Image (cartoon, rainbow, N blue to C red):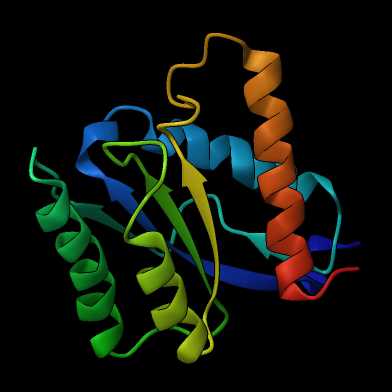
Length: 149
């Protein structure tokens, strides 16, 4: 599909401040996969917005900060065609804030995809092939959620 005729998804990217160095690199990889499918939806070279979520040792406070950052950002006017990417690095394998944030976004009609960096460190992968397979799956999920079958 001609990129000029594709709908541009405005990506709002939330990320754990623990991922400072690899966020842009991982976003670029996802962006290349999404746009490489030549679908009627594309993501920009850069996210519309990048919002760091402060983390600390107290995991309960981290959860509150996570959904608080999402709530604060979307309390203001959001762009058209928003797609939320959330790069999380919870203290354990599961992100306790995930169901809360997912519900908040869904209730407001925002599409979203989470990438858990605790289960696999995509910002510093031991196996680039494995990371690429996962991120290509993320790209497919983004397109599927946007309406590509």
